[in-house]
Length: 380
Ligand code: CAA
Image (tube, rainbow, N blue to C red; front, top):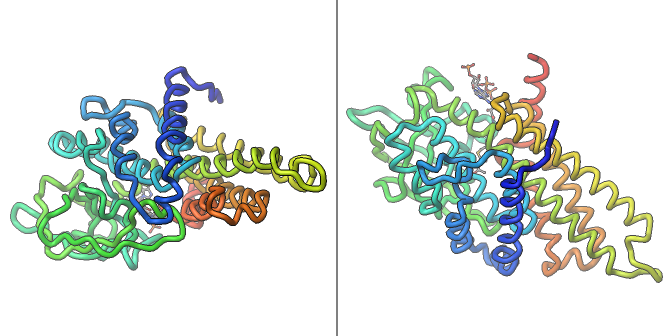
């Protein structure tokens, strides 16, 4: 497998790295503390083409490959995972889903705004009683004349109040179970569509996570994505790609924590020498470096599978499972290397540790990734 990056990919990686250093780092502690959405930062990312990276330029996107997207996700996540989750959901769950499965009219009306960063998108699958068990959708979409009527509640929706365009999964034919599920495009402000309270989270606090309430929301039939009953497959296919984005986010969190810990260990002295010279610290750095490199190979492999038209359900799930474990373990070790300073907000590693946890939960928990992986290897 050749992971040599092209000149274009290296340029995108550098541009994301510069953006993270110059635009995200200065306010990242305050945004986390105040749970403040990175509104200006997302606007700038849109102007630079980071909000619709894989979308056809015809619809306002950058027309790049998945590898470029994961490189950007890694760099942004080294500094600010709250911003990178907004980028990830918009790119791989919303834009990719619409670009791949939307109608021409839907692309013209919605994708152009999403891909250029003019509007932010949200992906609405989870419900109070349907998180991992995604087929148990209770939100209903009942067909009536030229529209559907949507009723129900969605939970833990990333960009819940900042988004303007929402992809909502709902049950149309209850008797058909997952084959009766549909996906719809909803707009903020549609009568009956209410945004619930904001969640007060452990990590990724700069992103806004909300429940959404639908009370007799009328959605035109032309806003259904794909054929009647395609909604569950739409959600699964979209999430398969989304998981590569979250794997890249986890990789970035791990690499960010490691880079800070390495630098600190070369400066901080104890017992007469820099702490990196103590084997207790040096061996931690060796483990971190090795595990991050292994995670990176899995993430790149999944991106390459997607870019070369191979099935990426398995490689994406393995990348997310492993990279999120490495993010959690590495960030905990980074805090340990920083000692007392690691427990203080100014040094960034405690935030990376808090942010790491969600990568083992959203877009399919680690346990769900193991279901996907085990089913795939057993049926191969
Ligand atoms: N691609 C296409 N189709 C797929 C698929 C895939 N990757 N995975 C499953 N399907 C299809 C199956 O083929 C099956 O269809 P048929 O009956 O026509 O063959 C159908 O979907 C149902 O599949 P299963 O029988 O395997 O369903 P299941 O109930 O056992 O569940 C699951 C499968 C993998 C566990 C699934 O429920 C799942 O992925 N759950 C986790 C949901 C999730 O990731 N939620 C995250 C929320 S979104 C989020 O976090 C976004 C955010 O804001 C950050």
